[in-house]
Image 1 (tube, rainbow, N blue to C red):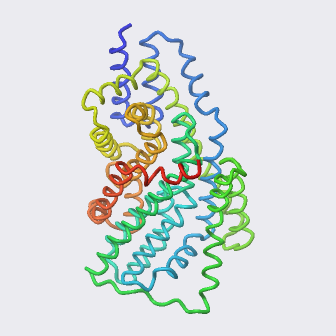
Image 2 (cartoon, rainbow, N blue to C red):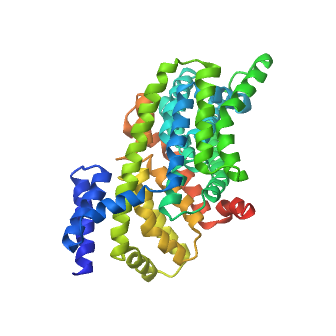
Image 3 (cartoon, rainbow, N blue to C red):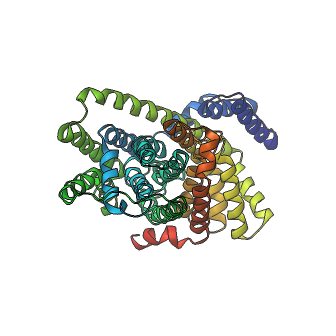
Length: 429
C-alpha cells in the first residue's frame, strides 16, 4: 500500500464531500471510511474510533456550559447585563457603543458562545442603538465583533473542546490563558468604538438615576454569578469543569425560573431541545473527527506536515505567521468546532516542535477560529447580526472591518508576545 496515495484519497474524498455540500461531520466520516476501504483496514475500526473519541469525562462539561448559557439567555439576562454595563460607561461619548462591548464581554463570560452572544445582546443593543441615532450598520458591525469575546474569555466550551482534542491540555490553564487576551480584545474594540463615536458625533448616554443604581448593580452581579461559580470552582480546585458546569446550570435554572420568573417554566422545554440539538451535533462532530484524526495519525500525516513547515523556514516567527495566515483563510469556509477538531492534530505538533506551548497555541487557534465567524461564506455570527439589524451581508462585512483590523493587532500580540497568554497560567501553575 502506498501511503502517499492513501493520504491523497483521504484529502480528495474529504474536499470532494465538502464541495458536494455534505455536513462536515459526514464528510469526516465518509473520507475516513473511503480511506479505510482503500487501505483494506476492517471497517469496524471507524466505529471503534468514533466511540473512543467521545469516551471522555471532560466532555460532560460542554452540555452543562451550553445549557447554562441557554437558560440565562431565556431568562432575560442580556438586558440586566446591558443595564449594568450602561451604569459603568454609559455617560461617555458614544456610551451605548461602549456598553455594547462590555455587555458582550459579560454575556460571553457566561454563555461561552459568540452566536448566543450576538443573538442575545444584539437583540437588545442593536434596536436600542438605532433608536438613539446610531447608524444601524455600525451597530451591527460593533455587536458581532464584540460577540467574539465569548470564544476567548472563560468559561468558553471551545476551550474545553480544544483541551480534549489536544490530548488533555489543562482546562484550568486554558481558562486562565483567555483572561488577559479577553481584556486586551475588549480594550481594542472599545478604543475603535470611541474613535468612531467622536468621528460620527454620537452623543453620551443619559445618566442613571441614583435610586436605580443599587438595584442595577445587584442584579448585574447576580446575573454574572454563574460565571463566578464555574471559574471559581475550577481555579480553586474545588470542582472539576463538569461539576462546575452542573452547579452553574442548576443555579441558572433557579435564578431564571424561580427568582426572576419573567418566563414561564414551560419555556424550559425549548431550552432543553436547543441544548440537546447543539450537544448532539457537537458530539457527533467530535466522534467523526476522532476517527479522522486516527487515520491521519496512522498515515503519519501530522509528522509530514511538521516537516513541511520546518522545511519552509526554521524561524518560529515565520512559521507562526504562516499558521495564522492558514487559519484565517480556513476560518471563512470552516465553522469553529470543525476547525478546532481538524486543525489541532495537524498544527499542534508543528507548534510544539518550535517550542510553542500547547496552551499558547490553543488561544491562537481559538482566536483565529473566532475571527472566522465574522467572515463569509460561513460567518455564523455575521449572518446572525445582519439578520437582527436587517442589513445585507456586504453592509455588515464592511461595517465590521475597522474592528476586524483591531482584532488582527490583538492576534499578532498574543502570537508574538506569549506573556499575554501564559502569564496567568504560569502564575497559578
